[in-house]
Image (cartoon, rainbow over all chains, first blue to last red; front, top):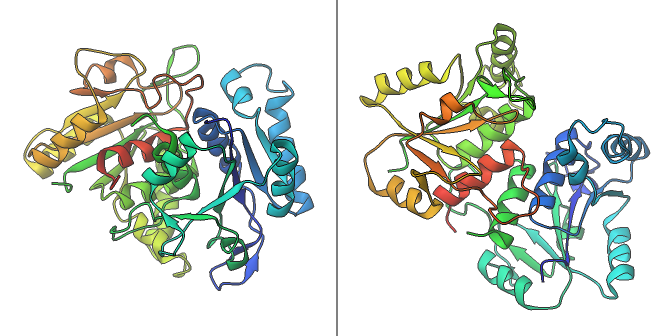
Length: 187
Length: 187
């Protein structure tokens, strides 16, 4: 049951270093690297979440360049990577879109450095994904992480990637890749 | 025996789309994302390989910005990420540096979409790394991949990350993250 997993990279609402709620900028590599990872692991749709008009315009232009054939066919693999990449103004709006399409709300998955009553291991979540009929939405934060209001929407919270590591500051692009591989990979 | 693994991102010699040998450009994210992944998985040294003077200068300036405290302490985690990041002019030179430091040559590890007599699984290589006394150098190519001359130096060649996937075009930054997690992670 792989064809029911959605992934979103949240640029708003997230914390900055001082724990204020801000909108971060979409980077070119957030679009490219994560689109390619999502495509590799058969994610149904990848959504960049931002309500900022200028960011929406810029992101649409980058995706459009590859999707509309402006790239002149130089890199077919890249065109294909963007087939399921979208830009959406809020997490709430994305949940609506998914519910409309799938006929039910997705279960929300996040990650945290802390342990909660709904924390789950990679193996347990992987087993659920392969064996149940739920729709899943994996949410990743930029900046200094997802706000409490978004974390409170989580149905399951994944354990940290390196719980005993001395240094634990992977880029969100690396974290997405590793988590997709742990949940959906061949290893 | 984790403290004996080196990683290099090769910008020369690699192939372009027409299988000509070229030097690719170092990207900011090649420096940031991979430094952070290497640090998270306790890689001893991360080397960006390029012989191009302008690229060496640019890369040194970016690394220096964080290492020399010019960033004003805004992001301590990022300063720490770059402590073991270097720029080196060739793979041969890097092998010399490692041999001088460790007293023996490293075993060279690469990845390929094809299977060879020295192909190895992630689990088998992981077991070797944790149990033997060899030094390892993981080489990753940019552009359209490492040239044949570099591939011919491989002691072991890792299997593709998604051998049965329909789409197999991860960014090198994602591939590095996933491979480090498979070889050295807690999963």
